Image (cartoon, rainbow, N blue to C red; front, side, top):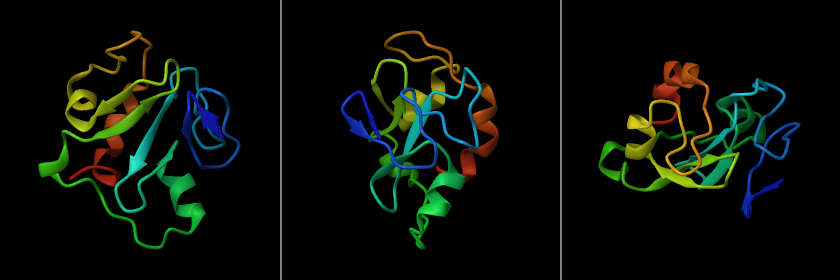
Length: 108
């Protein structure tokens, strides 16, 4: 699925990166997985893709763009995402604050 010029892989993805696993109005981010350099809406979609070698973003690379806003297509660095207060710094779209509960699945 193309989202604002970026390929986002996963299951049942809509135009704002929601998937079959997470599809509330606030579930509008995709995360570029460090291991395969590919955007997915969630860890489950990544697991289902069969990557087989999941790896989280190392802390020394938190200045890399790794989070995609499904509303406007802005790519946030990990550091930007970490401090954005669940809101896109570009368009002010609100992100699901519950994603922070899964930080360890994506980032060191």
